[in-house]
Amino acid sequence: AQSVSQHNHHVILSEAASLELGCNYSYGGTVNLFWYVQYPGQHLQLLLKYFSGDPLVKGIKGFEAEFIKSKFSFNLRKPSVQWSDTAEYFCAVRTGGSYIPTFGRGTSLIVHP
Amino acid sequence: KAGVTQTPRYLIKTRGQQVTLSCSPISGHRSVSWYQQTPGQGLQFLFEYFSETQRNKGNFPGRFSGRQFSNSRSEMNVSTLELGDSALYLCASSRKPLAGADSSTDTQYFGPGTRLTVL
Image (cartoon, rainbow over all chains, first blue to last red; front, side):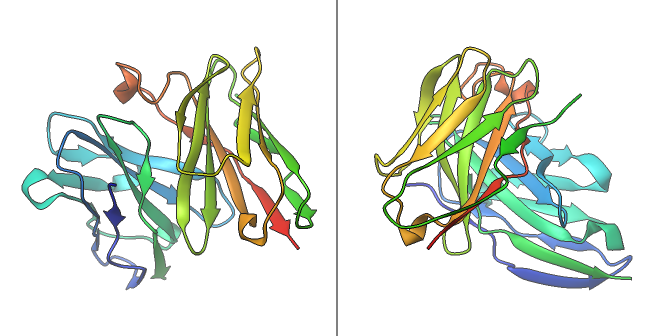
């Protein structure tokens, strides 16, 4: 069965610091990749997704992610975080076969003003 | 437009009882997926319904079931509740099924969840 690993469970940054959250998956075939965010008290929402094409994907609120097939990774980045980026971030993978999404355990990001 | 709504928002049940949760998708969305979120297991896919048919099912026991109505509203039912069923149950809707040929252009929108506590 496929699995998704998010290595950083808790990340604490100061405003303006750069962010990179790791996401690795175990499936070797065609994958669809997603990053979701859940702000305090709000619904889970899509940040960005990758299906095919340019491996560097840009999402909302200045976030981007890079798909590196050889490393089975889809890391999330933001060059300068803001206090409002404080949230829980989830990586998810869907394989071409089942389309059932598998989620990582999530990373809690706290940004200090 | 209105987002995905789930009712009730909070529920307390005792072991052995059954529970029904409801999800109303965004207007025009025909796919509804259900997820279970727990501190121990994280977010796990339960099942997906599209046009009143179950399209995908996750690795959950048969006590977990669902259905979808002609207006795309969906319900999930858990019978013979166990303590481990305590969780936040999320539903998400989209226009197209997860396995649709052009699902890359579609987005799942999540609801606020139903917090189920089993005592």
